[in-house]
Amino acid sequence: MKKIVLTGGPGAGKTSALPLLKKKLEDAGVEAGILTETATEVLAENISPDTVGLYCFQKEIFERQIRKESEWVDQKPELLLLDRGLGDHEVYLGKGLYKRLLQEERMQDDEINSRYDGVVIMETSAALGCYKQQENNALRLEDDEQARKLDELFVQVWRNHPHTIRIPACSSFEDKVEHVFQAVCLLSGIEFLDVVDDRGEPTGQMVSRTYAHANKVMHRTSHVWFLREREEKLEVLLQMRSYTKSSFPGQYDISSAGHIPAGSSYRTSAVREIKEELGIDVLEAELVECMDRKVIWDDRFFGREFHDRQISKVFYVVKDVDEDVFRLQKEEVDHVRWMDLEECIDAVIKHTIPNCIAVEELESVKSTYEKAKRKKGL
Image (cartoon, rainbow, N blue to C red; front, side, top):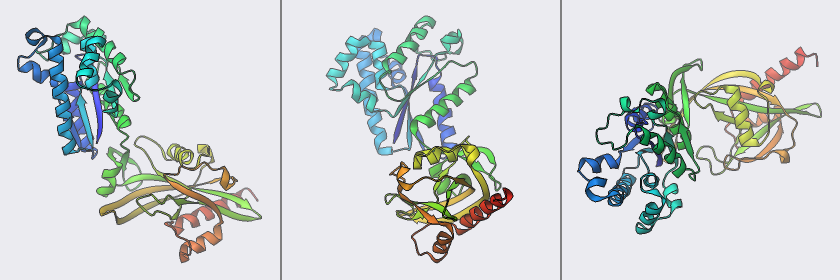
């Protein structure tokens, strides 16, 4: 379960944004939960700094939130959005009392940071001079000036968290929610894909990669074949999939392939994937388009159904690179090897090498390369 904190000064809009974010995530196939702000619950019970003192008030909130976070562990949504994190207490208590609180709770600063995968810090509407008009929580204690000061303090108390994104104040709340949504997607590490039609054109909807493969959703991938000429023969680079892969471990495959993230293009994604998997720099202009291939197949891995529905754009790139020059992403690629293209096509057809290669891609690459060569008069 990924845990992302939404925080910031009062009037930042985090509480209002949370249900909208949850809906956007669930529309994209991500199971999301919300841990509501504990301070509001405590204030509603007439427990406040005026009735019990500031330290006891914050301590009550702190301990309740720990219990609430623990309760979510058993529910295990894919993503949990939190209306404030435990580190926020330093803003209200100051460093001295906050340190005392951590000592009493037997916790360290790094433990607080490690509880959360990311922190989104939303700037308060007071930055736009409209805090009083937008603030609708009658239990709030801060005025406009205090809200602005608190806003900056939240940035400071989370400065040591390795994954924070600050969202500036925005006159359009809809735009602000979209910015927060993009930040949550980035911090959670959940891969989102554009839903596409049968021509590979995005429909405007996006879903998580997990959802796409569980629900037969058409999406996009890029397939890039590396070619080189040696002794008047054309060779193709094969990668062997890592033995830890859930699908087709230890099988020879495309030189480099990957899903197209939502909002990206085939070529941009392809060169990024090449860099990640093979450690080689390729320019988008070097990619030669060969074909679009619709992939439809169903399987089962580790007891779970897997449905692949993709439009794959197939490219080749000419790169005469020795095998030991590649810097492989070991989680994805066990090793690479150059192979005579004609021999490779024959081996794929006869399955004399372990592979998950579509022979029509190799044939298209060969045909496109030969046409380009003839056109150049070579």
